[in-house]
Image 1 (cartoon, rainbow, N blue to C red):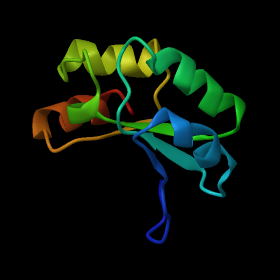
Image 2: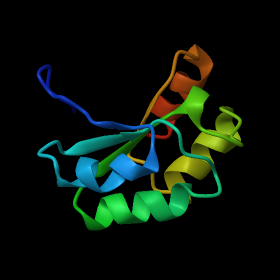
Image 3: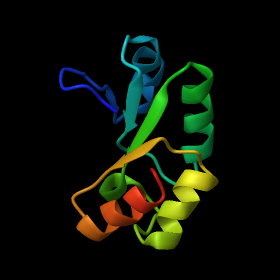
Image 4: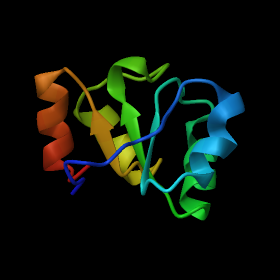
Length: 97
């Protein structure tokens, strides 16, 4: 669970990726990732001890349905999601994502 006073760095451009990994936050938000680079980005984050959140509406090449959420959790190993799509959030909660 994320505490109320947590600042989570959002990575919108790859040039800020290393800086986000070196900050104190336990989490990073991948705001401009796509399914082509997601696995390598998550791997680097996890190697740095960071938990990874993705914004479903900003994730390129992704459909936020039950199969998509399952793929994010079980294949890509995403630690959590952010979304304004209520049904996608229900799927994510069911997947413990």
